[in-house]
Length: 327
Ligand SMILES: Nc1ncnc2c1ncn2[C@@H]1O[C@H](COP(=O)(O)OP(=O)(O)OP(=O)(O)O)[C@@H](O)[C@H]1O
Ligand SMILES: [Mg+2]
Image: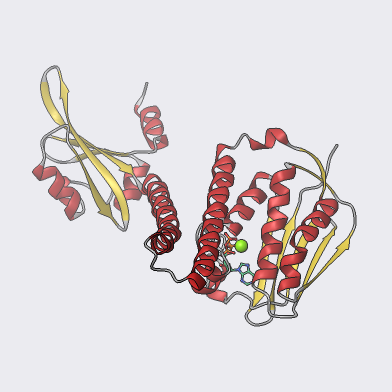
């Protein structure tokens, strides 16, 4: 193998590699090392040219050790190893691993667990508090009914949270599309409108459905959940006597409401797990902030495109565009 081939291979690595001789002169630097160090073979000629943290690492550790440092806002693991030829030390190699993606994934997982725990703890604390008051006889007769109602409401919140988490973890499993079949989205929308009719009536919101039969290749239960979540939001974040229009046509499902709308700076975030614009309002109506995260996930699984259009105080429209149907 010649030198060009070797450097081609090293450039293809996902880790940064920098090789030094005994004098600390750079013998070789691959592309990823240049990227992570923000240097080029011209600016990095000797060990002393390395960024301070990396240089300090070299000076401070023995061969075979690793350390994580932050380089230009990115977490990078440094590993240093002496090199030998025929038993004689010839220099050192520095390996740089970009932890960016991995750490980001770890952080998201950690945040999710913390959020779930928090969301479960709040209703449980209040359920246990109300039950204790009834148990101790601290609740007056007329309070007992009210407390029971709170207990039921908090339990329902937990039930819906747990079922959302189950849906999300099923979606994470990724084998879900094996259950795909031909689904008429219009018929499904009709069923969902029917299910949520009483909730809409309670709020004085009227729901209209238009369009016609539209075949989609997908998982019925997930598509039903998708429509349910969009419709539920459109009713929940509406104004009294507002309207919701559901339309199924031209490979599109759209749900438009005349509600409170979503401020611009929140729009890019509402599809994140647990994100709520107005925590108190959403909580008061029983929301946990998972609905749209589930919607986004279901769209991705079905190769559908998801678009949001919203103006504060005017309303919101969410449009899902499905790929062409092929038999
Ligand atoms: N149609 C809408 N109009 C105005 N705001 C909305 C609308 N849909 C969603 N939002 C905002 O986006 C946030 C996230 O919505 P999402 O459906 O993910 O969670 P949620 O409704 O709070 O709880 P749940 O998990 O029960 O659905 C909501 O809390 C709300 O602030
Ligand atoms: Mg919701």
